[in-house]
Structure formats: C-alpha cells, structure tokens
Image 1: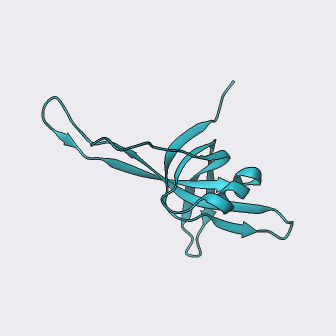
Image 2 (image 1 turned 30 degrees about the vertical axis):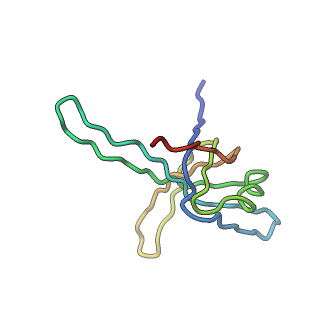
Length: 115
C-alpha cells in the first residue's frame, strides 16, 4: 500500500488566479512559500535560510476558499496530494511541473513573533 499526502504551512506568494472551463468547472491556483530557518553548524559553518515555492491547484470547496480568501501574504495551511504534470513548449522543450492538488486550504496563524 502507498500513500500520497502532503501538508504545507506557509505564505501565499500571490492572489489566487481563477480559471473557468467550458464544462462549468473552476480551478484556482497560487504559489505558497515555505521557509526553513538558517542555522550555524557545530563547526561554525553558516547555513542560510531557504525558501521553497510550491504550486498549489484547487478544485471544488478549496477553489471557493481560494477565490474568496487567498491573497498575497496570507498565512495558509494546505493539505493535498503531490502530482507531476508534463508539457512541451512551443520550442519543443519538455517541462515537468510539480503541483500540490489541494484537498483542504485553511488560514493559519503564526502567532506573535518573539522579540
């Protein structure tokens, strides 16, 4: 048995974009930034903070939430499945894109910053 589940907590990189299709279905997409803190190793080497950008795709209820509430900078919790999509550009290059197909999108509060 296998299981494809991902849970990300981060900040929206842009407002959700909504796409309407002829069959009446709708899809929302946006980017989500997650950041790992930098640190210093025992030997004194500095490892800088690292930000990863994730492509989020929403359908159904998660699309409705994204349309109304996903704005640039919003703190979000996203649960879904990791999927890969391939396409060929006009110049013939093959591109593979990793996307999170969101099943659940919610606001996430990061609380107060420590001073």
